[in-house]
Image (cartoon, rainbow, N blue to C red; front, side):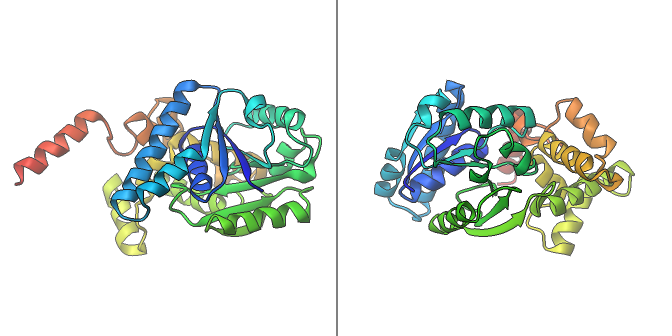
Length: 297
């Protein structure tokens, strides 16, 4: 397995492309939006520059990594002669079904089709393809080049051979693969997202403020980041989407999204990506922070 295609040049897609390219694979990064492709490549360059600055890689390593990446705005063109396609598009079921139906029509017969979905059923996605035994979940963690875990999710029909191939491949990326079965939220998000939702409920009920809740979890539970800040970094829309998948899948009220989360998403307060969530990430706020730092000198 040498040739990899990654669909989606957003946060997860460019991170996955970066990781494979740095490990010596030829990567085709695909996005129908040319601007998204350009932005994704710029992100990869910035992340490689940070690694060079920290002396984790050399300038030669950086050049080799970038040379391993080519870009496409057409799925049909980008997946020609690939051994593995990893879909990392928006967490939207209809979109994923459309992509996988197309992949099934245009990919090589033995090409493995993987999705980076964090909650949507692998079995349901595989059902729209001609070879559901070749479909599997590869749930990378953000930021992909740094986080060691890959959740490997077997659909109902995923073959043993495909599963072993993807487990072995993950190890070649210097990742730790963990095999799990196909149920809503899998393992990581089935545990994490309800905790984030409960943190939002705690705020909604007036038990404590944003910084107080995050401080309790950081200092009391040794979490590197508070749950409300983490939700901002994940994206509140993504958190809501995952909760809805689990709520609809299990029909259990414990997975019902907090009304505050729903209202914030409806208001466009999505976290870091929108400039505001539970915290303010706007340019004005950044300028205030810089000014305060100079004032403290």
